[in-house]
Length: 265
Image (cartoon, rainbow, N blue to C red; front, side):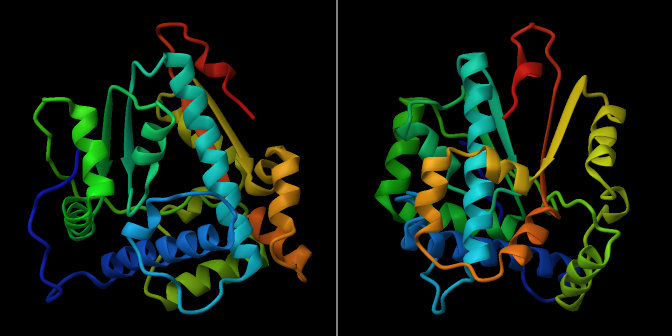
């Protein structure tokens, strides 16, 4: 696992837009920890990175993160199995993500695993890893005598969103702007087709995109039924609208003919 070792930047003079984006890391981590504490999925590592939320999170937020975590994990595991883990993962905008530790628990670590984010966020993550044995021990075990590579890259990040031209999408954009967090690249977020086109125009051979409501419907329904029993959801229509404005996109190049184009839900 690679992480940045640069010193945290002073808050003085930092660009406000970057600061707002960094704030989304804390928001997402707190939401994930709350969902885990309620029982949406198991993650024994998130507790070492973020405090427990002081207030309850809305059920639609918890279900949204459940779908996102399980949807991304499904695609990553399919990729790792196709390549027999003879590959690398570069996690851009990783924040306090715990994917490395969860993959290690499932004996699915790739040959190399990199995380990239703002130096301030990466420095905080390194501090947590070094100070908490349940995090540092698995990393040292995975290197088995090799030196631990520490590097760093600055990168801004945002979630893939779609259907941003309708009224619901405009409200989402306005809410982000009020937090000084402009959504970079929103002009190409018109539809699922525009998301796929963006990937194909940048050299990928195959591209897929589905909205998060579709992802939710493709997840194991026995587990979906379990999590829907955890909390009562009054505004089901709002949940569906929200999920239809986020998507998962994945693309592939497959010069080794591993069948990567066949990875789908």
